[in-house]
Image (cartoon, rainbow, N blue to C red; front, side):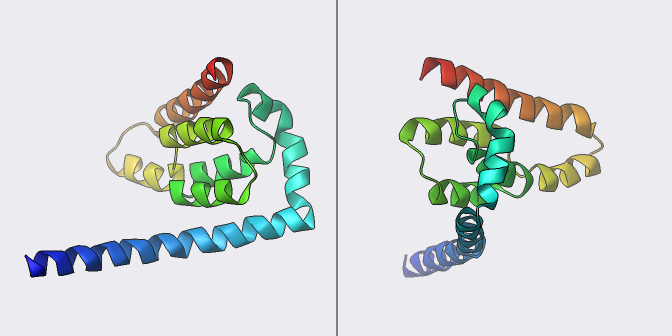
Length: 137
């Protein structure tokens, strides 16, 4: 029993450290981008698209981070933005459907599945879910 608890604590600690290595740098980077005004430029550019899913323009940074890096990076960005429960629900659902696309693309190629249709399907469903949630929430 004690060995099992020790193994569990060790595994959870390692998981915690690996998540912190992602979340803290992304959070700091996004905070820096907010204070330098770069996020404002990005937000203005993507605002029309983000309005379809009921999110502010700067939420595209969380979406792209989650899509391209991983879901934990997306969460770090979400934490650095001033979003309400509705927006976080929409964004979280979208990221749940399509995240870590670069990493998963490498895996998909190894198992010889057509990459473009699968990635397109995931991103498309993510955007569709965002639009639907924007309507019903």
